[in-house]
Image (tube, rainbow, N blue to C red; front, side, top):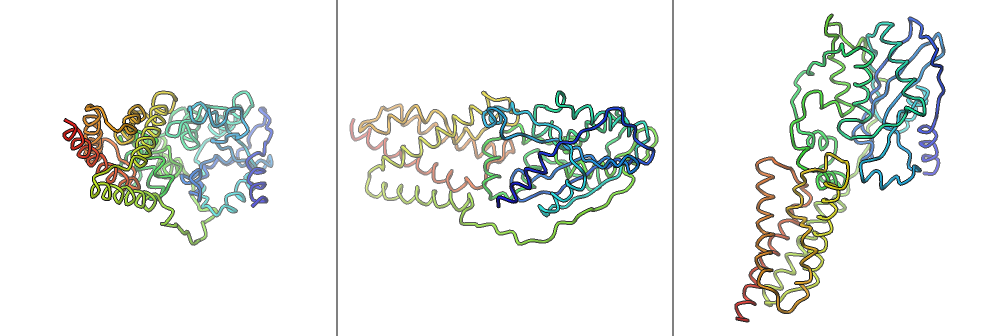
Length: 395
């Protein structure tokens, strides 16, 4: 394991030096490299790079965007706030290829149909962008990542001469669907995305916006043409390395659906016992109100206290109500205030609104949460009836 980590660090930290005055030969080749998805959440969406090969000058290098430094000051805070700088990297092509072969990820290459002027402009731009003073940029998962940067660089090198035609059988999808197509919906990564990201990603992406994913860079570039000549952008496309079949084991007993299913059954079981005995398990309610309240506060912080655009309009607040933290005091009382019953009814209405938002497509929520949300709604209804009976008895 240590050797693997050292090898990964070595590849990703390689720095190459370039001469700004180097002239590419007429035989120089430019290619787009597309790497398939890996096993971790960070690798699940693939990767892109630009390969520049010039045999005459013994040059064969891959430039890729999306590098980040774990050792950077306030790394986790800046990541959470959406203020983390990413950078461009450069590595010898064969080191780049060996790294992804070692990870057993498919590597595809598309040789570009560029003239000499466009090749030189592309190379000069990348070399200049690779300078330490120009290297960093503010990352955005949808609009400024390792894939969108490739399109941006090609547009600059060709003076926006490219027409991005829709691939065969292309079907527009929402941003959330495009993300989840690369994930197991019953995984913790998928659940985290559905909880943290808001309704803004449930809108349909335009065809070109699909290119925030590396696989769509490959698909759109494959059918892209030059506007004035209809010359194809890609001269030749080939698979450099094909992922070898492996057995991927997903432990259902550690999945969100199972864990929240057990949690839901536990809540329903205690609620049933409380109903039969006409009592209330105080500790359960304190846990539920604390948990939903804390998650609600975190969602609000992601929405209003960070620069992440994708966390806006997050209707997970309909079940993770931050106000629950303010009313926990009521759960400790033997005699509650009459307004608390109205508050519980308000929470049930919020859950009904969540269902409505889901059905009409305003926002898609995590399927792993379904057992928990059902149990939460039933618990709220029980508490309403329990407190109403208690108030009627008192008066």
